[in-house]
Image 1 (tube, rainbow, N blue to C red):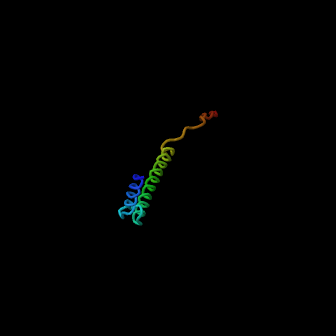
Image 2 (cartoon, rainbow, N blue to C red):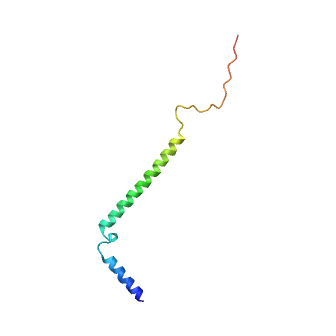
Image 3 (tube, helix red, strand yellow):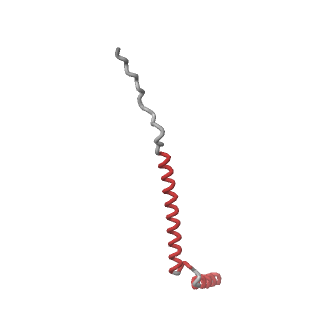
Length: 78
């Protein structure tokens, strides 16, 4: 019982302090901003990975694709 009572007192003192940023408007705004920054960073990394994969799939214009048929020389008419 005594442990519960002391825990409640410590909890109330912790929540009552103005230094706790979770309960202030500016603290919530700061957390939302950093959360948005993290999401943008993750999205940018994913987009960069997709672009690298897409570039790996695109053949370079200097190489010709292999021909599916062999070309037979035309018979000479004499």
